[in-house]
Length: 490
Image 1 (tube, helix red, strand yellow):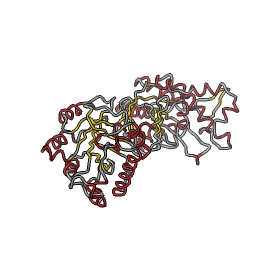
Image 2 (cartoon, rainbow, N blue to C red):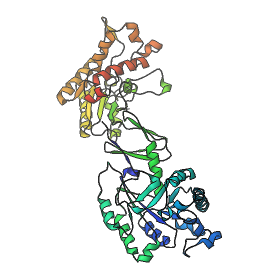
Image 3 (spheres, rainbow, N blue to C red):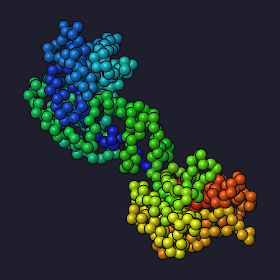
């Protein structure tokens, strides 16, 4: 069974965030430190102390001014803290609503951004206030006190930080850095008031912590609201019951870890989670995938994937008119350098065009040159640690003495000899297809070829013929490797 874990952005499993209250002048110095080390914080402001029209409400004279807020807090979160910082558990609920609404309205007007975060003034709240906040557009509310742990919150409206910056900050930071189990999501949340650094004369503490914790590859540095919004998006992620896909209906990219592989699911995107086995097809026109404009001509390579789940990824590089020689001479094999990887399967079917004596750029003698070129494919694929399966040519529509004829017998035999000599797997598609044809009415087999549609063509398949050959080959592939059998749709 697949193992799937939600990750933070870029597959990280730890997040660091800060929360500072009151909007005092020391926020400037704190933000300079955050910006220096690329850290992010949430700053909870009281509009009654920063609104120039409400200057009589100010308790202190060093509040950040309204005209400075946008520039000072750029890149960080501006959040609510009520208008005048009352102890709201003792305040009539209607007045609590007004305190939050007016604070939010003023801060949004200044910043031009939605303000949906909150910290309880004086740490004061009750259940009625918690129930009220979402109706006012608030998505989280931080309490006071310290949990001392790195757990994700169970209730974002009762969000307790890991520690105040004066409570074992460096010790907890060192422990946080050492967390390594990627199956968990860890959060370190630091809170406080920036003026406390002036009061306690310990700016070196936050500088030392920032220097220690910055630039860690497994830590996401986020504001409070970024964490909340990301986790909301992650909860919306839809995983298929068989874990074969993930659908992201949210507006944010969500990251997951599936069996140790990190995947990003973009907004509105459905992503396959199936661990695919890649199968590269090399061949001629009987294998090629054709565009709609080439109808009714078809190759078996464009239908082989119909017989397997999406966990088998067929990539068709077959091209009409090519032989073992011309495919190499034209550099088409070399173009697959970045395609064929270790553990891939590569199916090679060549022979039709090798038999074209009137075309020297294609022709190869079956007993010498043809074998030599086949060995070049074998060496090339082995160098890339992929698995080669040779495929004998498919029959043309040709009958003799009541049986369908193999017009490429010498090439089929040469391929078998090379397979035996080089100890590579081979599927005798010629024999398998002729045996299947023998079980059918002659008129039915004719429908597999373009001649049945009025073309002078006994070689190339109609869609029905291509599907027939693809089904034969698909059944044989299930006998070659268990991974094909496990994903077969028949």
